[in-house]
Image (cartoon, rainbow, N blue to C red):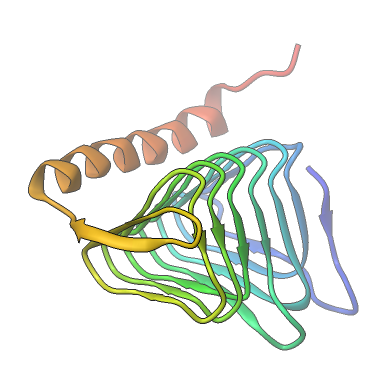
Length: 173
């Protein structure tokens, strides 16, 4: 996989995590335990820092990048959907970032918040804990319910399982 040191800063990936060989990690990137990083994802810690907690999935073609001396901080047990872009923002534990969403500079996505597919969380927006936000720009529409918590917990566990299965069973042919 393309892992690049940049100006003396090298990515750090926990041995229990899976990063696809077609994902790109540059510079000051840290990935926690039992994470999944899909093909085509780019985690660029050149200007700033990219931090990912434990059991988090960064699905295919996602882009994570921070401003100069800034941070993209992703908590534990987070699911980042395919094609999402996260720039200089914070996503707290258990959150879900929908397919193709954009989380912009200085935004905060709360614990157990769900960002709908294609939503744009504009600069500086705070999505509170346990809320569902959708649209362009993203607006809170309701609380996350127990059924959604259970469903997303199931999907997140599947990506932890998948990270283990890929590490031992994915074979290039």
